[in-house]
Length: 316
Image 1 (spheres, one colour):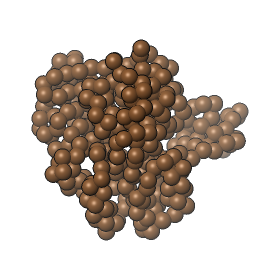
Image 2 (spheres, one colour):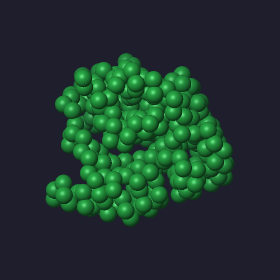
Image 3 (cartoon, helix red, strand yellow):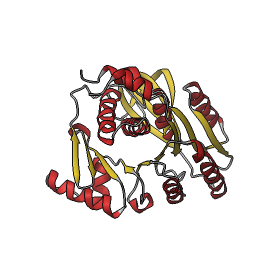
Image 4 (cartoon, rainbow, N blue to C red):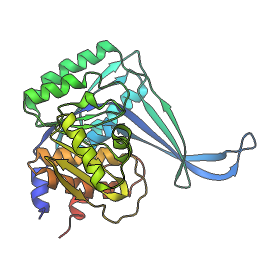
């Protein structure tokens, strides 16, 4: 039984370092009443805009929303979007260590929303320079002295070029390290404590499967090949399945209205990290992450779940 007050108290203690690719999510909301005479596309009359931290920055704000102490280490451009991202994060209680690279633009994802539906997304991005990534690696090493757990959030934007070294340094200091992966080269994540691919990401590296038994075989093979302590495959409407030491633990999705799945993976790894650092077992951490994911998919855009919302959905 997960005790609500116990969770509130214990979630305040962890010191978590989040490292990865950050971005600024911008939303333009408007009304759609006609089709453009210039092309067969809807015309959106914008009447509201919002800005939210995205990518690893959304993981960090998720950690902070759950009450834990969070430091975010990343790279942005030396531009307006980078300044705005830092400002938003500080408002949400995240301690930022953002290296400003004048040679790149801060990654921005602009979404145009009409009638509660995403109509268009426009991305702006460039990869950070080698020199600033080395400086970030030095800072990473220095920060580990006062950290209970590390989350590496890979969005494939180049900010985790030295991820193998980061994982190795965590292992040398016996600090758990969780990785949200991207792409096909999973050998970069070798030695991590826990990897959290979603269903499509896992299929990309392991191939398709016919049933849960075949999925379990592929998951255990990948876990062993990468020397992971555990592997968590998030499976959308099928819930999430944890593989560790030839043991399979499945947590089904709880019925809810799905509004927007963007950022759900961020919420999963943030909740896992806080719960594990607070001393909960991996299975209990998965249960809490599954509950948190069920809350966040009912929100629009990159959102987070706070401790009160999480405790509210814990079964009696």
